Image (cartoon, rainbow, N blue to C red; front, side):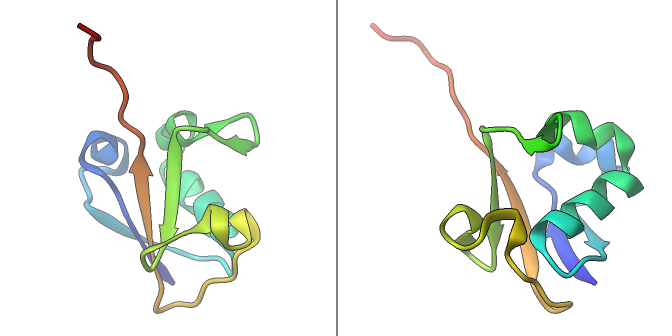
Length: 92
């Protein structure tokens, strides 16, 4: 099982867990397993079947967008990190 690190704003949807274990041989399968375990989290990560554009997934410090995306293979010793983009502020 890979470990998925959950950012603070999303922890209420995972029982306040900072990390959880998920099954799957690819990033997509692990995220699918994560949202099966914690269904309330799905709407914050996905829009339909696609990962929301402001959600970044890293595999051991590598952005999966520059690997094979959801098809990136993972092993049980890997760590996935969910990094939401932060936007906002005010132009002066």
